[in-house]
Length: 141
Image 1: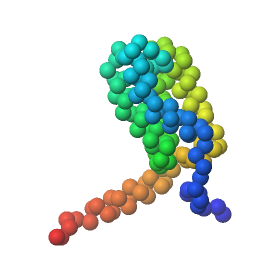
Image 2: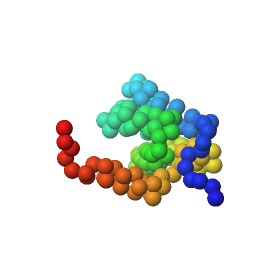
Image 3: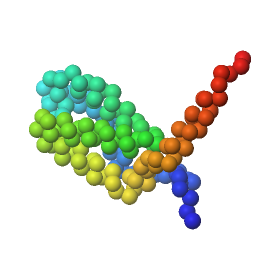
Image 4: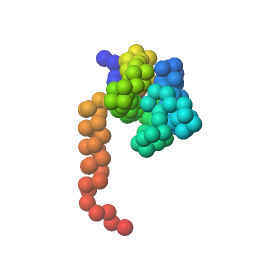
């Protein structure tokens, strides 16, 4: 029976993860270009929310993917779903197509191996360990 968990050796970062991480890390620059009048995809200077989404959230998700954090895949799905919803709301069909394309590419086997889905049993076990470690009462000094 095969053991579940991360592979024993180093895993090479797939091009999908590299491209998505670089795109997300470059989002603040694209948002800055929107100030100069180049409004592409969902980048725009008209909405203050864009500066939080593209200046903080997008690079954070990109760094999570690059570093292969356990919840990077979930963070990417949340951010790309946000992009899809915003694109539908503002009728930016290119942004919708790009976000859905990234979501589809994250389904490829190489991306799933590199950034596996969160396993509920593993999360529950981690939370139980955390709660048991912190609920032992006050510590003596």
